[in-house]
Amino acid sequence: MIGGIVAAAPMANIDELKSTGLKATLPRLKILDVFHKGNQRHMTAEDVFRVLLEDRSDIGLATVYRVLTQFEQAGILSRSHFESGKAVYELNEGQHHDHLVCLDCGRVEEFYDGEIEKRQQAVAQAKGFEIADHSLAIYASCTKSQCPHRPLAAAR
Image 1 (cartoon, one colour):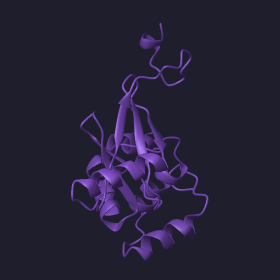
Image 2 (cartoon, one colour):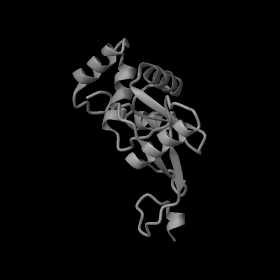
Image 3 (cartoon, rainbow, N blue to C red):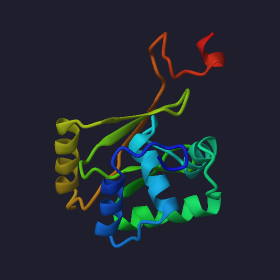
Image 4 (cartoon, rainbow, N blue to C red):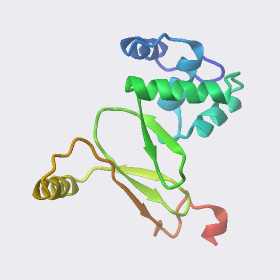
């Protein structure tokens, strides 16, 4: 157990850090564990900091920002910028996906659609481009009447 966070495979986290050239420091291990064990897949630095505070970790917000940047540079995390203007991080599992962002609660759902990918390639090719990378975020309102993620004020 690391600062209240149960590490299922601490050696795997240590090996993951070492394979990217990063030393396995306690703050890095705790922050990586937050992503591996957390209920939220997409997290801001403040979200990570809040989880660490709940687990009584003594890691400061500046350290969280620094480690998240290091993890992004090392390819462990991917960063996205959604409408909130805040950077949102998720584990980089090597598989491309796009995002649906709820305008009501900010929840992010991942999806992959082969037809959308083909159309993007066709459009780029028709315009004389070759896609190096892309990011697609669709902003929408949830249509589920009993959405468990909708804030209480919006559910009424």
